[in-house]
Length: 267
Image (cartoon, rainbow, N blue to C red; front, side):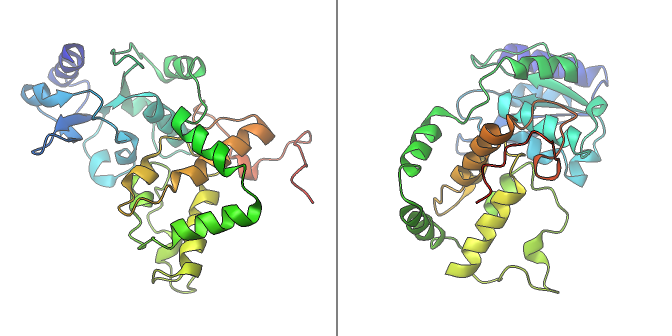
C-alpha cells in the first residue's frame, strides 16, 4: 500500500507525529502490530487481509502514550474504538492522526475527528454478517438450551484473559478479577467462576462494544465470547437505538436515563 507508506513517511519526517502504529509482516508471514518511529522504516508497513488486530488497544498503554503524538492505521472497528476512547476521556483526539482504511483497502483522507465521525455515520454499524447468522441460530434456542450451550463453551475457559487483553475497551489498570479483598471472581478456572467472568465482562462492554470480534479471535481455546458482547450490542440498538463508537461525546448507555426509554425488559 504505497499511499499508506508515503503518508507515514511524510508524517514522521515532518515531525508531525512521533510514531505510526500500523501492521508489519512477522517472521512467519502473519501480520503483527508495528510501531514505526523512523521514516526509513516506514516501508515495513503493510495492509491486507492479514491485518485484523484492533490497534486501538495500544492507545491507552503507558509505554505507547510516552511516544507522544501518534498516527494510527484505522479500519472501521478501530475508528469506532477511538471514538469510544475519546468519549470516555482515555484518549485525546488532538493527539491522534487517523490513517483511515476503507472497505476496499484504500487510504482515506481523515483530516479530523469530525471527518471520521462523518465516515462512520455512513457505514453499516451492525454486527458482521457471519456473526449475525450464528446469533440468529442461538436466538432460536430456548433459554435452557442457550444456557446449556454457553455452559459448554465456558467449560473450556482457562482464565488466561486474552479476551480482555485484546479489547480496546478493557483498559482498567486493575481489573475486578485481580481484586482479592474481597474476592469477586474465583481465580481458578471452574464452571461457576468461568460463567461469572464472561457475564461480568459482557456487561462491562454493554453499550461500548464495537463488534470487532477481537476477544473471540484472541481466545486460545476457541470460545466465541465475542457473541456475548455482540448480542448485547444488538440489544442496546433495539432498546436505545444507540451504536457504540459513533461520536466522541457518547454517554454511557447503562448509566444514562431518558424518560422515553423502553421498559419492556421489566418483568
